[in-house]
Structures are given as structure tokens and as C-alpha cells.
Image 1: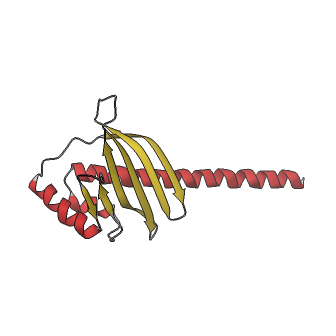
Image 2: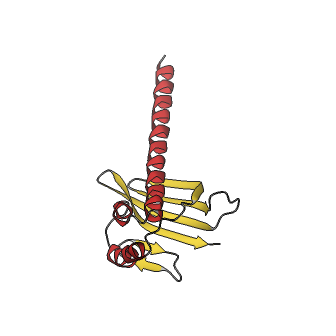
Image 3: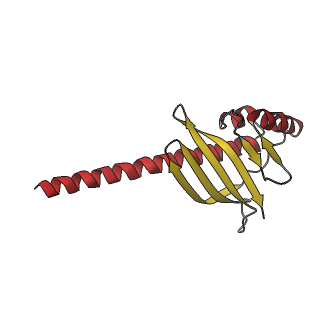
Length: 144
């Protein structure tokens, strides 16, 4: 009888843990895709809401387009969005690999244009959880 109770408790905890991890991963995908949709809509204020506004933020491809710290990201991207206000067609993100460790998470995925069969970039995001919400701190893309 005791074994049955222990196994039942273990199973229940395992199911609840898996559901919680899935909910965290879905929340992370929501942040990643929400940031992308806001960027495509050229809505800087919404775009900004997905980021941690700290000097830890890194945005770019690490080569020709790289910004460090939220102030620099804002100073570079807000004017671009305002100068070129026409919306862009959102891309498709797929092949997500997400790992969560406490209040930190990282995600990698592929990006392709709608209707395309091959990726146009490999992407990475690092997020931190602040006040119960996931915020981006690193946004890297590697064009193919």
C-alpha cells in the first residue's frame, strides 16, 4: 500500500513538473514571437516591452550589427523603426530548443520566410525572469 502511495505521488509530481516546464517554454516562445511581431510591425514600444532594460542586453549578429546595453539598442533601433515605418512580413520560427534553469532560459531555433522550405538564419535568445515575466537579454541571429 505504501509503495502505491509513493508511486502515485511520484507520478503526480512528475506530471505537474512536466506541465510547469511546458508552460514556461510556451511563455518563452510567446516573448520571442511577440518581440518579432512587434519589430515587423515597427512598434518600438511593444518591441521594447519584451526586453530587460539593462546594460546586459546584447542585440545583433555579432559581426556587422551589434549593440550592447539597452540604451544603445534603443538609440539604434527606435530611429530605424521610425524612419522605415512600413511593416514587414513576419517570418516563421521553428525547431525550437529551449532550456530553463531557474530564472534563466535560452532558446535556439531556425527562422524562415513564410512559404519557404529552407531557413534564412539560425537564432539564439537568452532570457531572464523578472517579477514573474520572461524578458530578453540576448538576441542573436546568424544569417545563412
